[in-house]
Image (cartoon, rainbow, N blue to C red; front, side, top):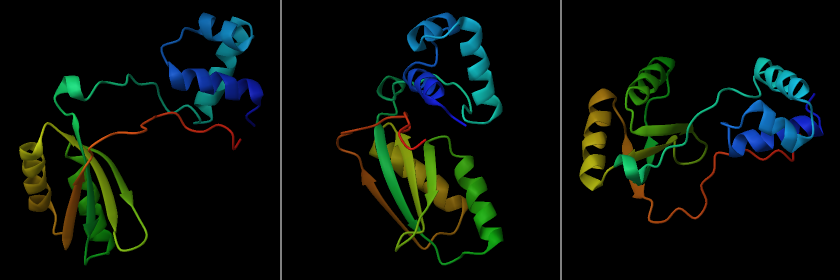
Length: 153
């Protein structure tokens, strides 16, 4: 069960996972040991899956985000396994979602430019047969966050 103190801990860690236990404990008004025990319990429950550093894509020369929609004529388990293996092997692909509706999959990728996308596209279609691939380039990021909403707990 996640109580209000756990929610507060999660809120702070989502904003800055590098916070030390001492600082975090002060922010959530707990002792250092109580805060540490709660963090460990949240990790053991799998609520906290890991802690990462968020990098600046532009400074790493992958500032162009591409949304790729895919339709496929194949839906068998063998094809799906091959597709999963293909996209996992492409580091530019940041996320892959199986969706409902006219599109079977939506991929989010980061590349340096249109030529970088073309190279990614060619590597993708060489790995797996696809019926239709369509892409959109992100012109402006109006909202982008890694913080999950905590108000549904």
